[in-house]
Length: 310
Image 1: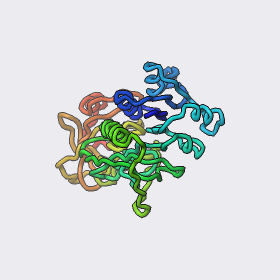
Image 2: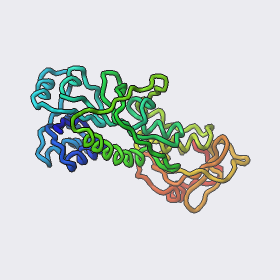
Image 3: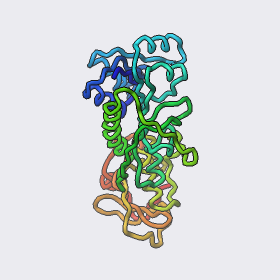
Image 4: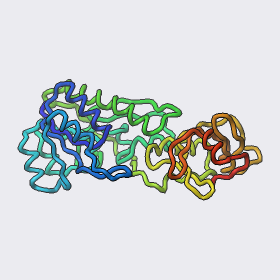
């Protein structure tokens, strides 16, 4: 099929690579403008633009999709389908109407659950045991299009959002190619979403990362897992931010310790009391420092039993 691909990050890039490897004709790639990144604020290109450069594919980096020049440029390719994966912007109706067949989106949830920007994060934050990938026909409303195909996935107990998203990209890319190969004439099966089952997955904010040790242990664990890689779950030690990057449910009870207190220091980290149980802190990142094993943090920062994280 003749495809124009919209995307921005590594998740999208894997889908683009699968389409190219499957022999689909990528006429053009649409991605975001180059941005300064890192401590040196060097200008960096998106993974989608890098693939376009490597494969000598034309690309567009519009600041706005409402620009008539952009719409005309997209029309000029005569594409069968627009494929949108983690692009980060809503397509206007003028653009949705361009392809001969339809605009297709890969979404990281089992729609209509978790419409919106952060479905993978919210599935873990809410303690879900199952999620999936949806291929949908795009509509003007957010993630409201008819469902073409879905595939379910389990969520591992210790899997964080970054790990799940990486695994989901493989499932989504494979499903996308299967759908396009199965319906080369564009006669995709379309199933309307059940409006009664809709839920939303709002964007992550930095404030969501602050740990409340008065919460149940599993809630804190899901917070740590669900907020990787950004914004990350954090607490404070001696007035400085301490990110908690890896945890595990402990078999120990809180005993006489208050929520937020270190109950014991052990070989591979330290345990801390929550509202009901303790959790084992296995990996941390001190303010302005690098990610390190919790055992190294204990040794370097003099953490002892009874220390309070606030």
